Each structure stands twice: as structure tokens, then as C-alpha cells.
Length: 357
Image (cartoon, rainbow, N blue to C red):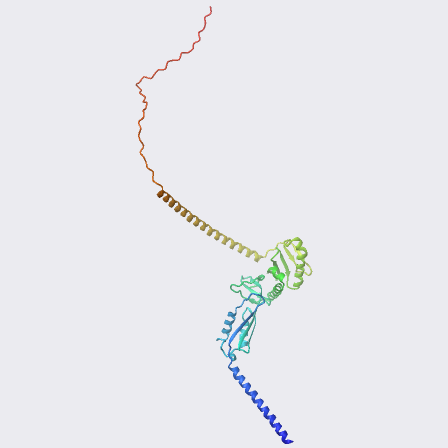
């Protein structure tokens, strides 16, 4: 009985040793095989919230190769720092998130999520940039135009104080709300920041200013405004009021107060001056072109007329000129020595008076 147990134990131990050796061999082979893996190619995927892409795959590949110091393809996978490449891509101002991983075919997958612009901001210093829903700034892109509301009078300070930070937070809330609501995304064209740090909206349809104050209770304010549009402005017309104030709770106040932003006035004057300058330059160019065309036309007309006269003169037969014959004619000459006929006097009728006896 003891011999059987000993044999069984030996068999079990041998099987365990064999299985362990096999596993160890497989692990070593896998490690050796893993150490020889190289990146075969890079597959880039760009995720965008809209139909337009702001980052090209070529730009992403250029950043990856620059961050890796040398090319990634045909490079040993062990020497590629995926986490470092992710952080490098996420430093790009138009990239919100980046994820990199290798699949079983040694292909590096790069999945990039773009930042979606919700407004184009103009600062008081005249600079401009795009802003996303988180308040992050993105630089303008060449040959790319995005239809988003325009924000004016944004601070040009590099370091934001407490009030500026509050304005940026409110602005992010307002732009995100407008972006996610199709009606307001189509209706709001401009967002003005007032000196007091409040906000005014300029619509696409209607010649009025919408005062919303701060971003608190924004949904309720714009819901009240939409109700005002449907019940009042639909009957009176969208240009009935110059100002529509919704910044107070449960109130919509329409007035004919005329308000003009100082920034808009200065910009308007600059635009008018630029338009006048361009108009004058165009008028001068057009006048000069007209004069040149008239001179060329007159010159061509004169040349054609002269050519026509020459052609007609060459084709027309020359007239035969005959010398006139001198014919003698009898003329009556008056001789002063000849006696002129004297006309006989006409007798006058004389009435004789009768004598009285």
C-alpha cells in the first residue's frame, strides 16, 4: 500500500515539475518574442463633435515623431514611452484628450479628441482667439472659419483677477448653453461684456439688445425670453423694443431705450472710415480705367476711320476735269457821249376858269 502511495506521489511530483517547466519555457519564449516586437505602423483617429476637423492627422504624426526624438515606426516597442506621447499631444491647445495603445498586431493606435469651439473672443487689446465650453483658449487656425457667437470686450490681462475669473466662468456657462440649444445657437450672434461684468446678447433676428445680467438662472431667463418672443414679439414685431431685459427674476421688461456700446461705436467708425477709403480707391481706379478705355477706344476709332477713308479713296475712280469753254456774248455798253433820248413831257390837264359877263 505504501509503495502505491509513493508511486502516485512521484507521478504527481513529476507531472507538476513537467507542467512548471513547460510554463516557464512558454514564458521565456513569450518574453523573448515580446522583446523583439517593433511598431509596424501608426493608426490615427480624430474625434470631433461636429462635421469639421481642426487638427489634421499629419500634424498629429509630426508631433509624435518630434516627441519621440526619432521615428516611431520600425522602432522597438519597449523603447516607446506611450504615456509621454499622450502628455505631449494633450499639451496641444486644440486637443482635449489623447489615448495611445498597441494592439496584438504591433500597431500603435492614437485616438485624439478635439476641443470644440463655442465662441470667438475679441479682447480689449484687439487680439482674438476661440474658446471651448471649459473656458480654454485655442488659437485661430489658418484657412478655417467657425460659425460661433462673437464675444467682445474680453479682458486682455494675462493674469486674471477675481472679477475677471468670475466673468470667464459666466462666459463659459453662457456659451455652453447657447451651443447646446439649437434655437439660441442660431439666434445669438454676439455676446457683449459690459464694464460692470454683466452680459448683453445681440440676436440675428431683431434689432434689439438682450440684457441677461450674470449667468445665474440662465435657463429660466432665456425660457422667459422665448415665451416673450412667442406671445409678444410675434404680434408686435421683433423690432418693437430696443432693449429686452430678462436679468430680474420672473420679469421680462421691454423698452425703447437707445443704447450703443462705446466699443461698437469706435469699431463702427473705423469700419466706416475703412469703407470710405476703399470706396475712394476703387472709384479712382475705376475712373482711371474708364479714361484709359475711352482713350484706347477713341484711338482705335480714329485709326479705323482713317483706314476706311484710305480704302475708299483707293477704290473710287478719279474724276476727269474739263476746262471750261469761254463763249463770247454780246454786251451792251453804255457810251456817255451818245445822246440819251429825251422823254417828251406829258401835258398836264389845265382847268380854265370861265369869265363872268
